[in-house]
Image (cartoon, rainbow, N blue to C red; front, top):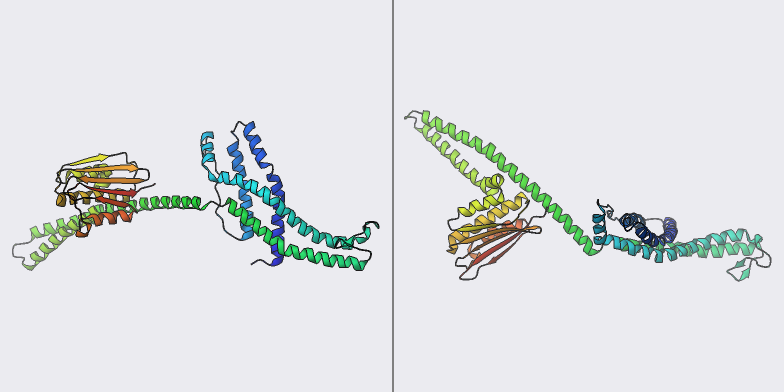
Length: 408
């Protein structure tokens, strides 16, 4: 915590600088208008950028006085006059800067004058007491504005009484006045709760996109390592064991049995590894993409399936894998339980989400409590903060709609 004398000194400097800058700020709005008219509106974005730096300087001063941390506001202009004007019209921070200029003029000048008066009276009392003799005889210096000073006793009394009184007022008022003005400045230039929430949502969206990309890249790496490394070695081991079994004589007995078990175990391990690779990140996704992978799984469903694909654009690998497995699970459920004769799979991109819709003309009546497979779909979607909507009235049709965030 700052010492009282430092609070007074910092507060006084803050308010006196604020007084000067408030007087300068009175010229800001006229300069903006004149600059915009003279330049044909081409210079206004640049002038608003300068205003942003001006207001940010004040915001940093206020935050330093209060001892609080603030997040810098960006003041970068895009290329092109059209883009600059679009940013200017959409930027709420620019409107906040303009409102702050008016506020700074209205509050900064009175606050600065009050601080100047407090400090000035304290200093004047001491100086005047020492120089009481230079005042004319017909208009002598007066103690507390009433008692004339005609000797050193009254002069010292003047210096002590008025100096102490003004000093005490300065000691008490200036720091509070400075902090009050600083809080108003920070509040005026601080983004609103809605703006902070929108910024946080944007940061989370960017973070999610980065995590999804990294997760997808890691899945692809592991899939390739298992496919090209571990699986290839298991194949080689199984082949060697097979060759060894062929080379054994018929009367090998226990050795032949051991080799047979080892050979069969290696083949079972390969089968399990292929299943792990397929359920982790299907190779068809890496080789052919989501559109072809969905078409392939729909073609192997066993019931006529129609696939409708919109313009999907670039999708994170984790989203592609989730969409693939959701379609596969839904089609499997339809083939096993619905009695459907036709199913439609639709994949579309809506803003920052991938929409997966699977509809069949079956009997309906899906009950998640009976282990219909919808629980697994919900878990896959929930892992990406997605949503699942199931509509399955008795008699059908059944529609499963999944929305997966995929902002990037």
